[in-house]
Image 1: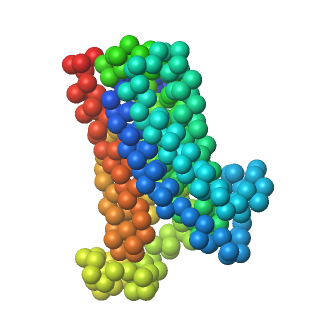
Image 2: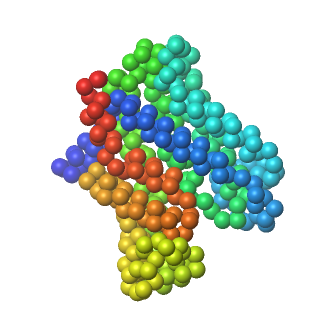
Length: 303
C-alpha cells in the first residue's frame, strides 16, 4: 500500500504551482531557440526526389503545400511575430484581463502551429532528417497547454501587475512534462539503435569509421577514439546506454546527472562532426539542471 500511496502523492504534486519566474524565463529561452533554428529552414533541396513522409502534417496536407515556394516566407514571420508576442505577454499590463485572455490562448497555439508547419515544410523537402527541431516542438506544446489552461489566472495576474509574485501561475506538470518529452525522445533514440542492431551497434568500429571519414582531426577525442577500438566501444556503448536511460530523468536525483551526460554527448557530436545540436544543449541545460528548484527558492520571498 505504501508504494501505491507514494505514487498517488506524486501524481498530486503534478498540480502544485509556483510563481511563473522559471516558466517565463524558459519560455523566452524556448522562443529564442526556435527563432534561431527556424532561420536555418530553407527550400534549397526542393528539387531532390521526395522520400517517405516524415512529418505529421505530411499525412494531412496536400503535397502542393510543401512544394509551394512561398510557404516558408509566410510561415516564418508568422511564427516570429506570434512567438515574440507570446513571450512579451507579461509586459502587456496596460491591457485588461478580458483582452489578455484570448491572447494567452491564441498566441501560444499560433506559435505551435506555425512552428510545426515550418518544420514540416523543411523536412518534407529535405533528403535527411533534422532532429534538432523535435525537442523544441514538444516543449512548446506543453507550454501552450500551460497558457491555455491557466489563461484566466495569467491574464488577471498580468492585468493586476502581480504576475511575477503570484505563486499559483506555473504548474509543476508543465515543467515535468517538458522534462519527460525531452527525455523520452532521447530514450527512443537509444532504444531504437538497440532494437535495430542489438548491443553490437556500439561495437566501436562504426564510430571509428565515422570519425576517420567525417570527424575533426583536431578534436581532443579524435586520437582517443581512433587509437584503440575498445576506447571507441566504451564511448559508443556508453552513449547508447545513456540515451536509453534518459527517461529516468523524470526522477529528480538522476535528472542533473543525465542532463550533464546528454549535454556532453551533444556537444561532442557538434564539435566532432559539425552537426548542430546547440539548441538541444540549451534546452537540456534549462530543464535538466536544477534551475527549477533554484528559481522557486529565489521567488519565495516575493510571493
